[in-house]
Length: 264
Image (tube, rainbow, N blue to C red; front, side, top):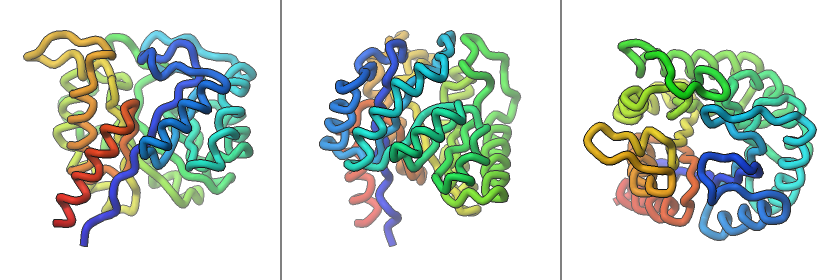
């Protein structure tokens, strides 16, 4: 039997300093962007109001609330909405506005997700915002990251969270070779997570490591579409349940091909 077709999570950055300029939208434009991504086939819209890119400036909670909550409210009756935040107050307000998934790069909001009865993403990170030039994780990056996210997911389940995804945190405090090692072994992460009843979310879209390949030219975010789509397709083939992307339409088409191929 073919598994459920992976969901494509579209990115709406209600912030002026996201690393990928076309995803920066605010207010009514952010709602319109979300609606357009739904029309392109997104099954989830991830709304964030604070960039976590390397070197980003933290945003006061009141400002993040003003950026995020109206967008969540404007989209929640059209599509499932995830909120990308590390602040409990923002997460709580976003859920009240209609969000049903906490995309929590801090790994600290599992108790709140359990309390509110919403989904939670356990992501591996090494500081928020991520360091520009992080120290090596260790020789077994795949094992270390897998153990971390599965441990966080188990703890969240003990707290009562019912819907949990693990995310290897591609690009968050990792060197290019470490990101590539994690991509190469996404099948192992997916197998381990699914064996324990957890979903897998992968977000590589337009990230810097895709433009720093050892045998290719250095690429800016605007030139990383092909690498982004390649990793999304590979992640889906490995078993990822959700892929978080900026380029929704092309990724939805790719997801359909992956599903049709598995069903054949």
